[in-house]
Length: 168
Image 1 (tube, rainbow, N blue to C red):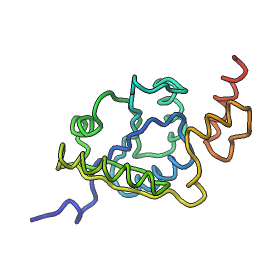
Image 2 (tube, one colour):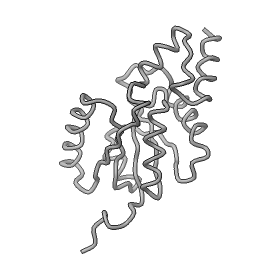
Image 3 (cartoon, rainbow, N blue to C red):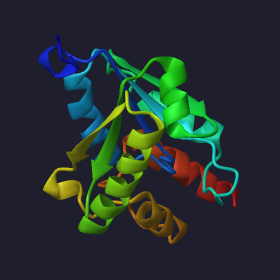
Image 4 (cartoon, one colour):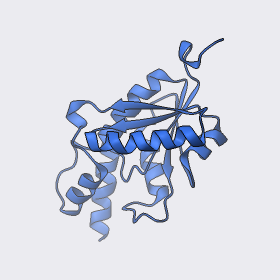
């Protein structure tokens, strides 16, 4: 019997809100793309959540941020993550971890997903220490106060958020 762990996995889904994408997200993505033939980074369209950027803006910013990553594609989706993963043929979910609190939440989510879709495994990747404190929420708040965020997000995100500030 051949195990999926004995050969390189084909396709992984890296889902999230990415509102906006941070250097921590890109750190996780960079390492994930070395593990899989294809990684789809997908923005969840959650109508229940009050988002800073539209789904379209987030997708565009991510596309610009990953344009040199050959085996990465960008998408958006609605609904359950595991259902979307099944629909696109992904057999792994990528989840980034920064804190113990996230580990507890992600562990519960992983176990729920295993019940719903046992054929899909979750791979947890810890961010590098220099990115542990970066969160999209922190970036949004700093941006709202016109603070330099260039150490936390890709250059294209910095430029986009500065343009948004000028329009306000």
